Length: 429
Image (cartoon, rainbow, N blue to C red):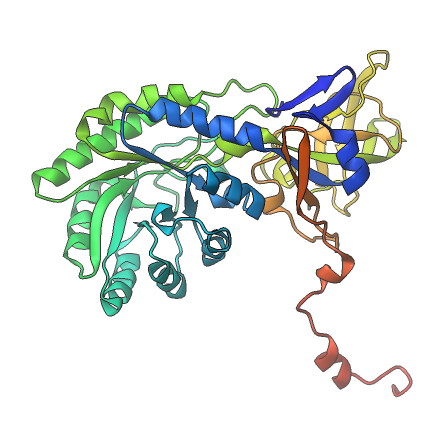
């Protein structure tokens, strides 16, 4: 279950706050995050990496709420971004641009330009074509861009093939046999300063043995490049550390460090790690209210007010999230139920065939481990306003994103030009 989420008696709490109180004041669906749980995970990972120079860079795509970003920036965390919008979010909270790494397979020229103007720390590049564009932009500005080359080691890892990023069939990085030659070519381009290697192989990784292989690969490349007089100061292992959703046995930060440090610890490099899900996934829950209990000849459905537009992971990845009632009653029998949302899609579900107490309409439940890729992947499908977000700190909580209004649904749209060109019903023949 989510870190910081626990029962006090029969009531479910986030740290020292009764989740039923948040649901009553903020409505549902609502995302709730524990600030202390996020900071505890960050501190644990830093402690594990303490034997070597390192930088933890939170993956903004995981959960880009300004309250979450500000919390991490205040704690000295760096950031991994993949878009100009994420860069703008960091600017909004005053994050240190030197602690920002710009990753991603499809950076536009205007995004690179904005990142150069912001003075970010490093660009992770994935092709010579991308490097040539950055070279022209950096040369025109008269200030070199520090870069790292992303390597694709053809290793499969991660909990679903959509989140495996390090195989030869994936769009990411430079193939391992071409890595040394590519690094040479980048070193010859004006305006670029190659300083490191990057390798992100997937997400929700539960076996750290694959990181050991990556560490050996990056260590070998580092020695080869240095033998040619090329600098390698940073080794970026990406992210991907798995978390517990239902019954997984995920590794700890110390397990990751134990896997990679033997191979790279003596190289004198700085380790860069981008743990998004690991920092916040278990720190959040999604609150929902039961609308109806529906009995059929074959199934029992709990129809709730949170759907696949709020949390798409079960439908998209087949992800399994723990589900708990906010008020538990041990006298109630459990039976297999499908927890489904209100959207017009058969794929609109949060859990199928799950053993749960048979809740009644109006009762509340929490979907666990929803801090990562929950709100950030949510949408307005079926014209549904997106959920509120709440950040808890001890016994206090703050709404860090208000629930969208109906007017927010069509903000930026303009029906006027089309409406003016279409005859009114009274004018129609």
